[in-house]
Length: 587
Image (cartoon, rainbow, N blue to C red; front, side, top):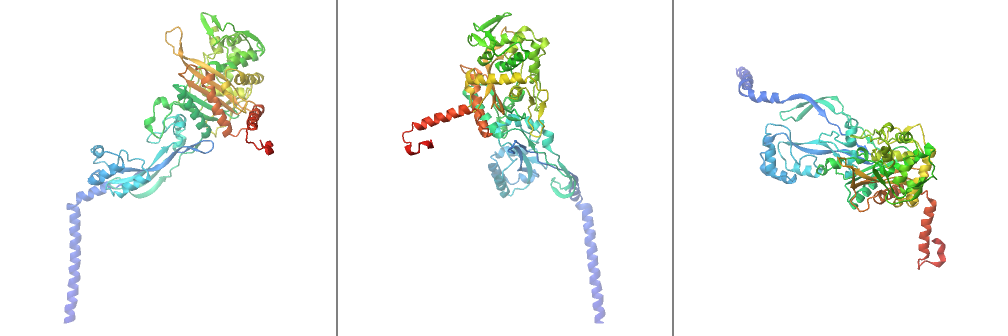
């Protein structure tokens, strides 16, 4: 009997538990169906499966020695993913503002109309250092998270800014090399399918659709060591002579590599507040100018090629001016009688006009066209200009006279450097290039070889005894030509050139025996009493060339000059009163 009762009791308990379970399940079903419907419907709606972009870093830009000129650095960025939660902790928010150097009221104004947004940037909250990131983490804020963003960084700053350019906030190239080769540097973002919650936060990665591909590294022909030297000397000289602007280009005459392009004024691409359109200009590539007397070596080459003129011919430039077709042409002084090479050495305008009258203008045009005057170099740099050279059939007598003095045509400093590299290479034309990977572009038709060899010897004398003595380099042979161009102002005036504003130029080659470097210096509107290229631009060439030759470890080729310098040092030591007589040969 007792066993029967126990058996009934166990069965009743089991039935009771089953009934309770069924009741709980029914109650929960009712609750889900009618009571919490809105809550869970919203939760389901918040969960979303979508495509997610995997951002990749932009390719770096390096110089010929693999020195970084531009790179993308991963940084932490603070974003607000739940504005309501974020604004609840006023005390922590004020601490955050102190860390970000931000006014608390400004923060509230920023987020005032963003309560329903699940992704908001905070001003001053992008590209944070690890130290600041850790301080913010310690605040234990709600409604925020850190994401990784890439910040573009330019180690050389203002030294290379007009060439390299910079990117916008979305890492697209805005100017300079960054813009020219944007598609190469950008790379390709990847893609994956993810599940996100109500606040847009990724809760699960489902699968990867495509892998990200980083942007390619871009190697330039630039040598950052020479770039620093060029920019330093240019900046110092522009400030010294109170000029408006200036530019320098260094070209390797053996292969066309652009080793440096300096422009001043410049800006710091790491600080956008320093930017202005005027400072952005890469004056070496996009500014065209009339080359003035730097064109005269090419006038000489054309005259020699015509066989109507010899180096020993005499030209009477007295009394230092000529009036032709109601226009007066002047020299800086009366040079009297000059030989053909003396005209170039002394930079006589009257002598140059007289030389141009000796031969057919087509010969001069053909030579200028051969060296690339008026021809675009095609560096792929934004806004690169062609220069100006009209066809000889359009030249009147006054145009020929203007061309003989370096007017009535326009070149960029880079085009002028290319032209002088033709002298360096005895008539061989090599096109300048900015990418190290590009092949050397040589014009196979070598012309005017014997003429340019003679010209090279003449421009050597320009530095030794002519208008460019301040460009002489101790221990090295060098040749070049000064130029001083009046600034074209146009308008309705009879004289369309300013008497007050000038451009001072110098174009030079060093060494001359085994030519390596072509350097062009342009100083725009110097505010000095003496504004001639031999005084303003030539000294800059000397300083840049001296340091560049040392950096490149190029041995002195002017042995006699070098020995003379050493002998002078020995003589000084011989007069040293405390020299030990027993070891005199040491000195």
